[in-house]
Image 1: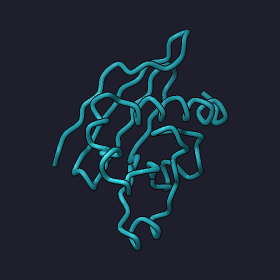
Image 2: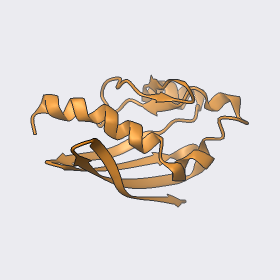
Image 3: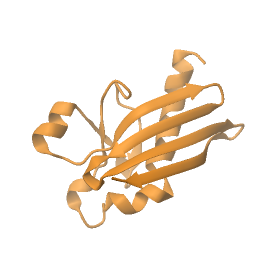
Image 4: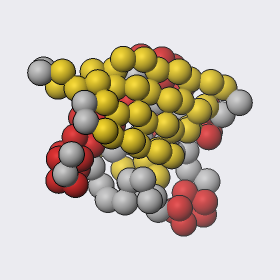
Length: 121
């Protein structure tokens, strides 16, 4: 898999992760106004903005300085491994004390979630 292929797959993979049914109850976007737009930490795993949407609007990418200085809630992708037709994504949503792991598989129709696990810490 080339670097450009990985980048083109990143958007669909991350969209599936942020849209996980298991994750939805933890966003509280309907009751906590500060949770919109969804913020994603820009780090070595996600070094640049990826076109993603949540709650009907584009997600916002923030730096660690923005996250720490304002104490804003954010989703952090801690690892993304893509190899051939499979991908594994780990993430955390510290404001809710969550850590998660998602396994995906590429099908002829696109990426699909094979399994996911979310734990509260």
